[in-house]
Amino acid sequence: MTDLFTNLTAPPEGYGDWLSELKVRIQSAQQRAALAVNRELVLLYWQIGHDILVRQSLQGWGAKVIDRLAVDLRVAFPEMKGFSPRNLKYMRAFAAAWPDSQFVQETLAQLPWYHQLTLLEKLSNAQSRRWYAAQAIEHNWSRNILVIQIESQLMERKGQALSNFEQSLPKVESDLARESLKDPYRFDFLTLTADSQEREIEQALVKHVTDFLLELGSGFAFVGRQVLLDVGGDEFFIDLLFYHLKLRCYVVIELKAGKFKPEHLGQLSFYLTAVDAQVKHQQDGPTIGLLLCKSKNKVVAEYALRDSRRPMGVAEYQLIESLPPELQTSLPSIEDIERELALGK
Image (tube, rainbow, N blue to C red; front, side, top):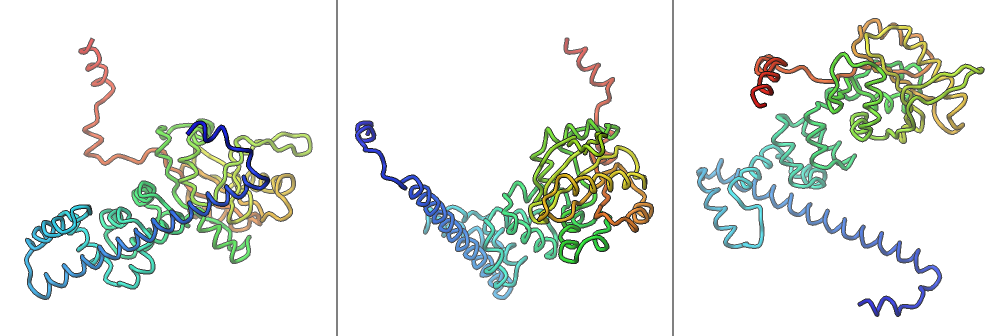
């Protein structure tokens, strides 16, 4: 094999580009084949689950028929996995949750089986399952990302930030901008305490920028931290600067470790003006601002946003979600930990 490669002559002109194109075609074909296999598998599982439902409900077959079916199918198809009693029960639950076969064929079949199980196990109603299924397809979420988004209650938070986008942006951009923000933002991944200061939170967000981008949502690209703006010889620093690929505009994020105050928007508005004048390209949309604060009075924030011409939103952030009382009482105190350490010496 070594002699074969050493004896090869130099490739002709254009060979490298052609090889790259072939690699892309092969990878695309592999992906299409995998998607086709997954689609057929999901549809098969739905049909099996539907058949079990019909026979149990209309013909009075008992629960033990699933155990018998599992044995017989594994004997008939020993090379195939997925015919355990547990998975057959999942197929029945899958068919019961999605009685519309057309929706399964046109939409759900785009998701792998383990995504289907996640939707069944973690969500209790069809509306939320449909929403998360659509999001997973649109953003190509892995199963782990789907779990994270469900557990963080993304559906309840998405589009909930207070903003003035309806007054400050065209209709299409306004809707997309509103849906791009959420409230509250959850920064549990930072493992910081509730009394952390702004600079500490900012540094931690940049250190965990991958998790931060996941929490921000699709479309955000990180530009920089403490971005310098020189205005008339005075220096100003933006906490965090992003670019939104769908909105085609810069997004300025300012952190406030305390409660929201109306004057915060004055500072943020100044930054938006400066970015529009010094940073954004003429083809970019108006720069958007997002003020993240520890807490806010909703009415005060609405009043402060009402007369601003600059597109801005206000949302809260959470560092560590409060523990249920039963867990709080079961956690060891500092004294308990020190006592255990002393006994271990």
